[in-house]
Length: 308
Length: 110
Image (cartoon, chains in turn blue, brown):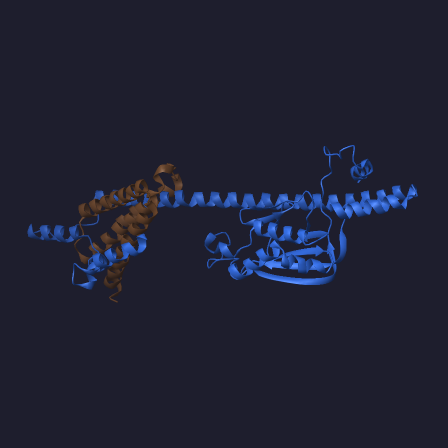
């Protein structure tokens, strides 16, 4: 309401007054045509009236002292203003270095976790073989697939969703400005879509290789969507294991309706492809230390879960 | 010639001693430098025009620096310090350019 109200007053304010359209430029004209301090001219005129030469010699001590001061201030300013930039550069490289060091630590740790998990699996299989109890091994596998501790594959579909075209970066190439936020998928969007897929009968779900388990949170930090505390970047490929009816049920339920609304309202890109074989990786599930099954119900399953 | 030597002596002394400038004065340094340069180029032009006066030069230098610093200080207090600094740099920059153009005409007749 204020913008249309202000416009006429602003237009009338600039409209009347001086008839010369270049009047507002008189300051710049002054600067361009008479850049020299008028004091020089008047001082010269005064000296000429007194019969002295118009120009004073360049040997006056006042002039030399002033020039020494100017040179000093130039050097000091150049020095003082250059140092902070160097310091900030140093801090920047330090931060980049520490980020890279932590990333390599994470890589090394996850490699260790993977090898240890393989060893555990091998030892587990060996121990179960010794017991000559194949049913226990089968049950362990089923539980691993159910809880997300083991990778799963089967028929299913891959639902790829992506931000609206052109929303990933703005004109300055900065993805963190909030000028084009509406075309960007949020963690809430992904939550609703994944919930819709679970409702539609999905048996196992992963987003960009991050398995959705009972311990998974889809959340956001800044602009990035985190799944299993890993930052994901678009496009988000949601792999789903389930029967052929999952796609149809998803399209019919609230999650599918929400996704259609995103596509029509915010130009979110979406692609649903049915696959004969979808692989969903294992998640790095944390061992349950404090949680245990309620004793009166199915005690056998709790012991197996605690062992795995 | 002697004034140029004075300028060089000042530069060398500043580089050798490089005294620390208090952090509170640092926003004024670039503006002060531009104001000083403006005064210097104005003086060179006045010398070439044959109307140089040392008192006018010193007064114009000091008033340039003081006014520029005052504008930046006022801008900082009002929250538009960077915009006012830009304004000062533009105005003094335009003046430096046109003075340099006049100096060039004097020296090279072009």
